[in-house]
Length: 92
Image (cartoon, rainbow, N blue to C red; front, side, top):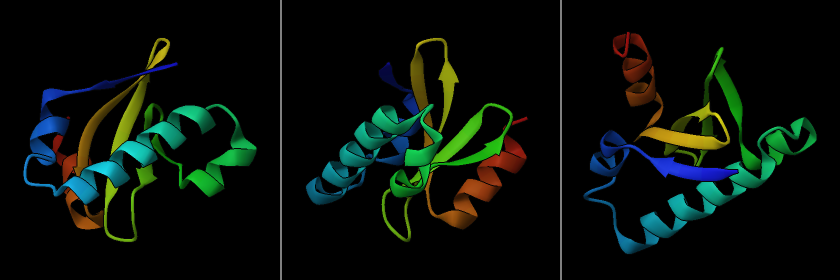
């Protein structure tokens, strides 16, 4: 499985520090390794948001939203809990 980052996702992270970007990279890699293996989802902080939208935790404050697109995970948004909820309400 490969990982794809949308333009919106990159914009969400434009002001992130090097340390924060490393944590995001680790979370993306763990999501890629764990996706489709339900017994590993909890440790990776994966959670289904709707039919094809998922989130993974970077930290207690930071979450990443992604979907499965064929053989890839498309990361489309990064933010805190409230920002993710607003993203989900407004994406339609």
